[in-house]
Length: 157
Image 1 (cartoon, one colour):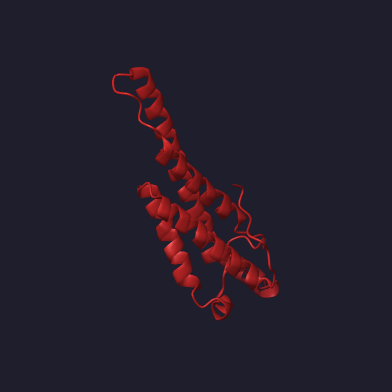
Image 2 (spheres, one colour):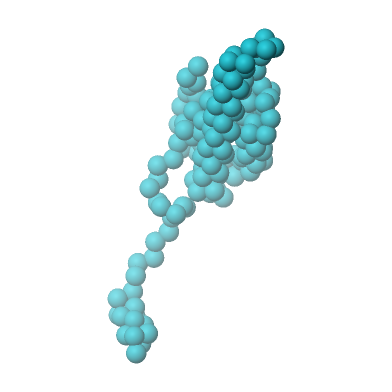
């Protein structure tokens, strides 16, 4: 009986068809947050590589070193994951098939950037962290090109 009532109601009051390119059609996208996260990955990578091992036998200095190292690693991995999440949201929610005409290497660029995020989590590589920043800058350019705008890519450091 309830299903008959709902069917009748749907026939008499049809819903308007809506379409959106994502789960929540807010229309607010910007690769800036991915840039900030990627920049933190680069910063933490540089800090990790610059850490100096304390003298043998200095237990207090070793504890401080290990504490600092573990914090830098945790931050680097967290920021790399956030970079990946932001890039995947842009890739899957903002970009549409029409953008492939304007950016034919869109899928490869995003795929490689996501792989770089993973590489930055797995290892301490200045080269990969710098490549991630370059990929995010390229995505920044692609994104703003689809909006017909030339927005300068700024870095905090």
